[in-house]
Image: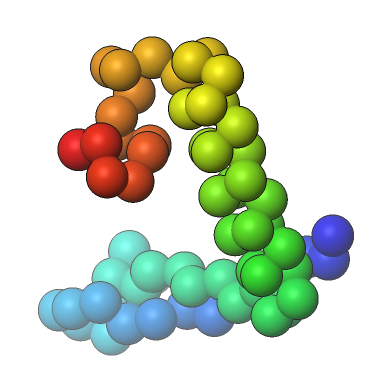
Length: 64
């Protein structure tokens, strides 16, 4: 996997202060698609095999 490109984004208040900026990282499109697909498939596998607890519903779609 490649490193992401990071851009500072202005949040609010004074522009001169470093604390008023947040960092946004841009991932390459292929890496994003791969990680999203992998995450969805792992989640389905964990739910089907009852490995994921009901207490972890925040990580599973349609279980909130």
